Amino acid sequence: MEIIDYIPRGKENAITRHELSKQSGLRDRVMRDDIMAARYAVPIISSGKGYYKPTCVTDVIKWVDQEMHRAFSVFRALRGAKEYILAHAGEIPDEYIAKRTWLKKLLKRRQSNG
Image 1 (cartoon, rainbow, N blue to C red):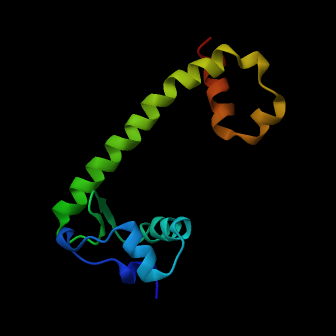
Image 2: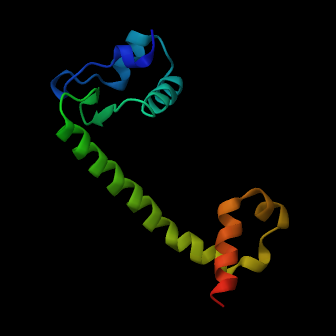
């Protein structure tokens, strides 16, 4: 069985990570990775009560709202770190720059903006 088969439909039937791990026999880290992979094809909603498959489109919309807010918060939180990196650009080893596309783009944008 796949992880999606253990996840019930409906918020009222949400299953906790602990219970999902017990039922599936998967370790927590493996189970979370499997859930993430399954989400590429099927919406799996997480709430304070656990994981569930939606019963209506509004469940999915609310979850997308929540996740987008979380993602925007993470990106806003990175601003200070990026400013620090730019202030110390001369100290960054070349091998760090070579391995990180996002870092190359950040430094290039800085050069473009003068």
